[in-house]
Length: 285
Image (cartoon, rainbow, N blue to C red; front, side, top):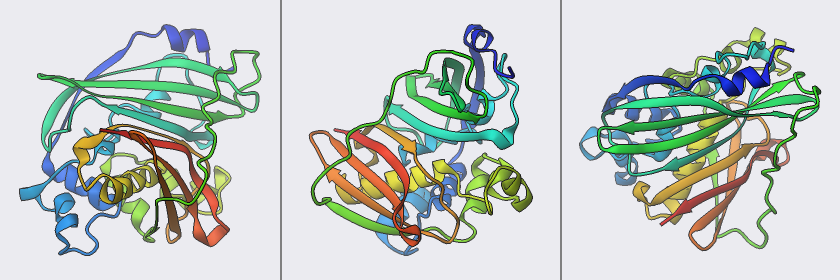
């Protein structure tokens, strides 16, 4: 079996140093659709360096793609075909607001390997800290199709009961035809998002949008509409990637307020509300 669970779990943490500048933050924000309208003062907080604040989901790409899915596939005990890999879910805990420019030490390790029968799931944890202390902790759930069935632990279900009642806010966000091409410049160069031939080999009719792009678009929508535009209120953000998005489609983002939490459901309008993000929650102050 290409995944040796015992070896992957026993591997020592992988430590490195990352750095980023305001230019990297600006590029990320543009990649998730910020800047429309270009002169809107609320959008200039994402696109103008003199008033820049950092959306917490930037942590998933800081340092041109901090350890995550691709890094997890190069860990000891893991040898799989990239065409069989999907990003199944992402969680992020922010320990304090992210600076617009910085240097941090990251520590990455596989914390779990689950046998889902039809697939294996790797949980890749990344912790980042700078000279002032911890910055963020992120868990990427990596689904490797066709690599389950060895009799390992199935792992916990992360599915939550869907929110009920009328959403507090519903937004529609268009995904540009070139959005995946722009977003990939923040560090995720998986050809699934750009190369039609590779996408076909992976079982898709054409390249798909990065899950983490829709993840960032959704967090921005929550911050802008229910958190008063204040990125520092975000404490954690968790989602399950429930379906694909094609560039050129439109996301429908539905949000429900809770006690210190916003529940979110995201779907694609053009395909009968096909699910995109599920079991999604933003915890906030």
